[in-house]
Image 1 (tube, one colour):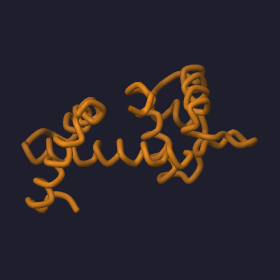
Image 2: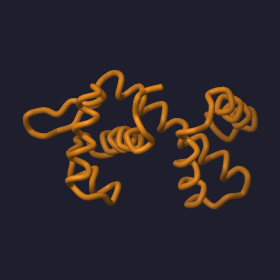
Image 3: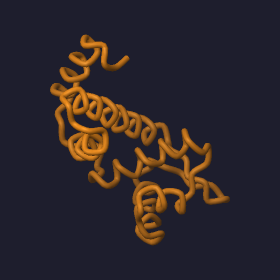
Image 4: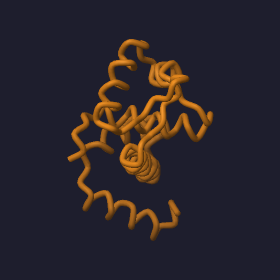
Length: 126
C-alpha cells in the first residue's frame, strides 16, 4: 500500500502526463487539467509533498520524487493498458478511458499482469 487514496494517485498520474506534455508543471496546470479548484490542488500538493511523492521548487514548479515517479508510472501504465483492453472489447475510447481510470486503482497486480500479457499476445500493446 502506498498510503494514498485514489485521488492522490490521480494527481501523481496527472503530474506525470503534464510533465511529458509541457515539461513544467505548476498547481494551476493541474487544476486546469483535472477541472479542480486551485485550493483543492494546493491541499493535495501539500499532502503529496508531506508524503515525499513530490517536491516544489522556489518557482512553484512541481517535480515527482523517485518514489512519486515510480507510482505515477505504474498508475499511468495501468490506465493505458486497461483503456486498450476495454477498447479491444469494443468499448468506445472515451468510456474506456473513464472506466480504466476507476479500475486502475483497485485491480490486483495478478489480474493486471494477465490482462497485459493477453494484450501483448494479441499484439494490441507493446
